Length: 274
Image (cartoon, rainbow, N blue to C red):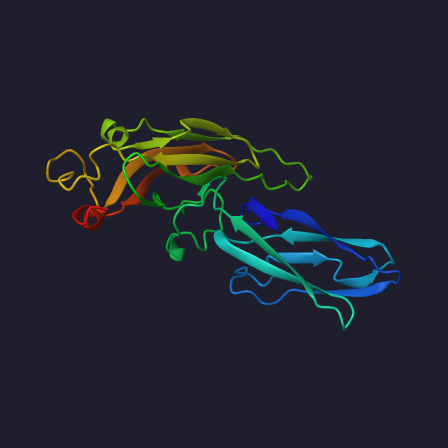
């Protein structure tokens, strides 16, 4: 159960349904096992209601799961264990959620050192997200064989005001034009510019298609390419995020995303004529 992307002190809710298919009313109880990562304050980032009661014969109970983190982190996760009768195995639902220091975000890239995003609890403060990210696509087996990967960009819903109303501005994603050498070496992204509505989470697809010559033994020594067999092909792309509520410090978060893919070394196969 994905509770989505929120701001510190924000709140996201989802529902789970417990159905009783027996002709008898059954008791139920909910427990939340301790997790490795919680809030920095005294309250749990997770809440479930109701936590106990009876579910009617051939009836159902709808649980409300709330995610209320107090600091930025991608590591929030919680198992919800629902028990009924002693002879029935407990049922478990696994929940995840993410919290960002400001509204716009970039997700599903390579893991970052935790200290770079942990503890950023004040939206719009001078604390910010890292400006250098990395995305690893995997291993490419031969020339002309494309490999793809996707990262996610988005904008969190705004935090509700005391009057219950919430107004959030759109975020904006912009990818700088790819340098000629990056395009020459086979890199492409499917998105140049996107509007990120509050609550949006959108994919950006990266494709790497090694050109003819990149798998030749002299690919690098000849000066034709920056990578060859048995090496990592890399490209650095510039992108920026603006807007949202709260916006990044200075209203812009500039990011350098390093893309990389490993070029399989088939030199041994070539030597034996495979």
